[in-house]
Length: 111
Image (cartoon, rainbow, N blue to C red; front, top):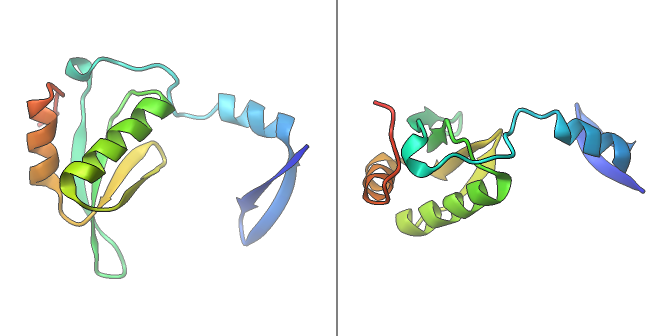
């Protein structure tokens, strides 16, 4: 079975076995740390469109746990977002809302 992946300027096909082996060697960790052992870093990024994005990085979580956390944060902030390169991205400046929710739920923020 072949899968389509985006590479460079267009789509290319690669065998599913190759994709599985490249996923195993990615930098996204498969294990998780407890919330109190995390060193989460928050930052604001200004995009070229003039919009701000809140970046939440430093998470050592499984993919499923990262997706669950992103969903909770999007709900708390009432905004959209995504996971890109192992970091959670939320639309707008959500630092205060995210900081309060993380502290309330015993997550460790790096200062």
